[in-house]
Length: 342
Image (cartoon, rainbow, N blue to C red; front, side, top):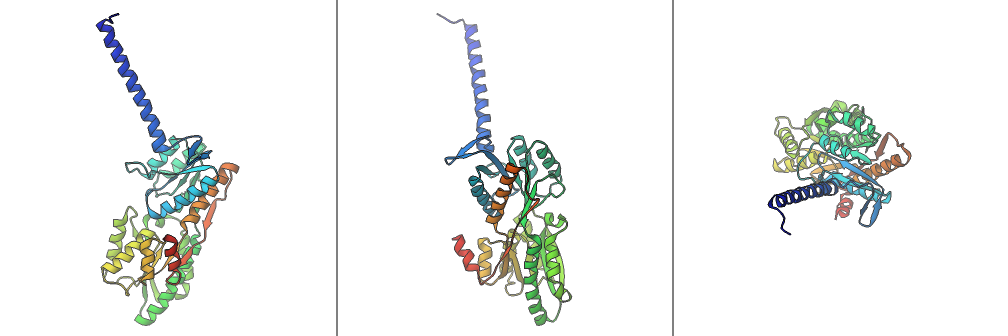
């Protein structure tokens, strides 16, 4: 039977519409599965997960953050919770607020957030809470929001560790130079806004006994990238009165300080007290270029966050502050940490 030409056109148009509709449905399905990985019940590596939690950071591929995430993911697996490092697989770069918005829209079961200081986060956390999505902050807090808990190192104890290292060097340098020792602390712009800053309180209290022998100052760094950190350190080193002791409160600043001291031939002239156990930092400690490094164990942070979120999802309650005790890496124990990395 011959189909009229007019009917054939209609059939072709209907087929095209059906194909486009199926393509649209396929695209949406792929986006949700591959980009957001949102499922109420997810099977990954033969493990059945009952809950889906996302972790959000402005730098999802940064070494320290990845260590936190891997530990959280392993702990979450034990609790039947799938934890995703959201943003790591996305092709485009999104702000923390944009990533947060996506996860709330995707109706995840919980969010572990490293805040970047964005003004809109307080309101977004409020919206998430209203939607029944608990938000936990880690490393950087949003204290006036409706977040359920804040996970960090013990800031006051961290400040005391820094302070003890400063005291030792101030005593040595002041006796040698016969003047006040210049101590400069590198602080990112977000940390400066955190109040009260317990790390500063710890440093000041610990160094009170040598306050008359030193000039203490803070250098604020725009935390938008490694370049800004390197530029700030370079300007400090090339100043007419460079610091005698450089205290770094982040992994990026520690690496910048280490590389700059080498590049500008300041080895032996400037003492570096750093942060974290990156490969470069451990190398600097082994060579005696970095005096020591304060370590907030990334694995402990990730594990603590995952356990805290699991507790909240089960009991709808968790302590408002969850802390991890800091440790100190020195030339005496640096080999232990290098062996762990290997």
